Image 1: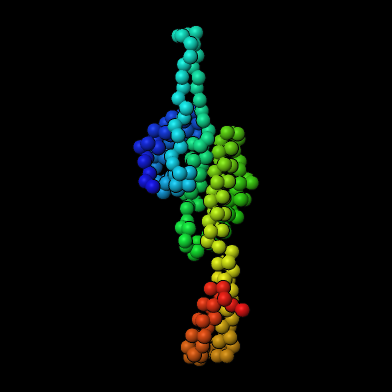
Image 2: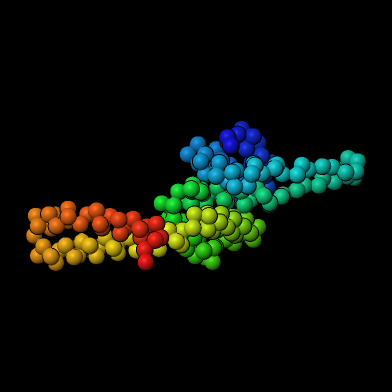
Length: 202
């Protein structure tokens, strides 16, 4: 999905009623934020719609203007894109990101409980974006079976450390002896660690 920044800026300009309009326009105009904006577009499936256009009823001075300031989904789209600078969209097939995702979920949940914003409308958008980012990461964590992956990684690290500790004891700390012994059990140790990583350890 490609980012159509020209169309996006047209959409943004229809929301001059937002109290955060100027900073929002600056954010979406900055090329450095393109990937974060694209992350938001990918998550929501499209760019947000333009604000509902004002219209006039009645005749002349006896009529009246009807103005709108739609908060959703532009408000949360902007806040989600800002969050994506710190919390990007990770691959759904790369388990090596599991620890990052786990740490991010803890950080996001803490931040959500500490949202500090005086404007009620802006605060609502911020909270919506946090909830969506948390939902995105929670789904990804589950898809990648991160609990199993991280458990297996921890077990593999323990096995590796145990082998290393055993070599230190046997070799008396002598580096040459340690490497000589290590070469003899390297294959066995590798097989044990591999079984642990694959979740086959008994």
